[in-house]
Length: 408
Image (cartoon, rainbow, N blue to C red):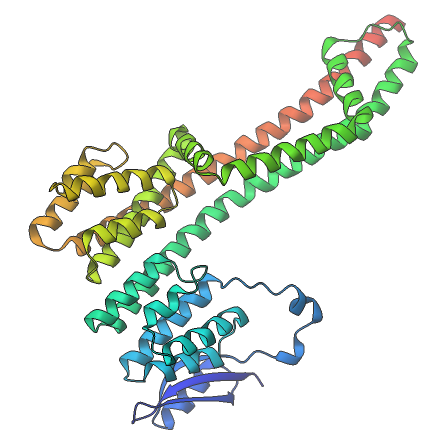
């Protein structure tokens, strides 16, 4: 029978941790409620003895977004139920499925017990808790609305994770096709074409006149066969140099600029950036963070250096007394609807609510755009692979046809 780990809250608002064997999760929840307890978390207990040496050796130290979202939601529920912060963190650390998150929570508990605020304790782990997370928690602590802020954070993280997964899912298929195409090309050049070239020369003799396409293919194949120890290291060196250059500020800016100027990709990249901007800025504004600080934090969370620079430039304009809607309205990176909605929010004092609707709208647009581009990518990649195969087939059939005519 499956074994479940649960966290529940009793009538005295005390967190109770335990394990229970039931046929399914609903049976555990029902059993907990019969004990007049309020279930907070119910999940399958990890079988520590079943973990292989392979998993222990290659266990990642990075916290997955799904684990972070679950932890945020559970912490919000426990704080809302009146459970003390330290006790809540200890319960989450004890029953966390992620060993990396468990170690981080233990360190956070030590910092909080030493007198640090939760936001400051989380700031010591920037790889897991980014600026948006930390600033919203700090604002929630200052305003006494940490429960609501954690709920906002969980929703925001879920939305961001959903968009990221959809983009990765859309890119997975074309990447696989590209890899297969490249491997097939190298395989043909190294193993197939040399044999075909040898057969053609045996049939036609050393003075045989081969078509230009066939000669080009044979030349490429000879280069790969004879100088593979130079060509392959050079290719990997170029790829490595490009990756390193892409990590530099100048490289990131140029790549992001290229993305925003590429016809098909441009629309998707722009919609993703606007959705992230609107949702993050809305969450920070709703938490009571100052506008300038909201913009500074939001600029780092968009994931596009061009938009980051545009928002940082807007900060200077706002300091000079201009409104955010008027500044963004003059920037072609932001559609007119964003500036219009911002203007409405500034007039009504509901900027966070208005931007939340903008985020929802653009996230739906992202879904539609990704579905559209996914339907286009498949036939394009098939056309490319078919063209490559057809080119090689033509380079083989043309000399065979020519030689057959000579024999006649």
